[in-house]
Image (cartoon, rainbow, N blue to C red; front, side, top):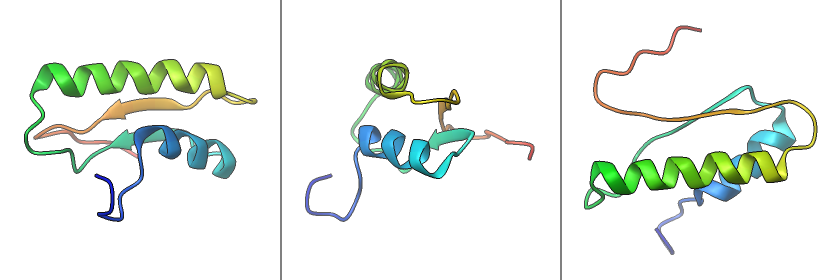
Length: 71
């Protein structure tokens, strides 16, 4: 959200590429967004990752209740 100190999903991709992050999991979503909106944001972010990629592929996902990520 603008002026809340949060970055956009696209800035997140850019930062992850610069830091050579392997997995970008978006979380802390806008509470008024429904599942369809979150899916659209995820798809947009994945498309941007492909366009902006310079080297390694970044896995992009979105968090949801009950998600467990094994490191």
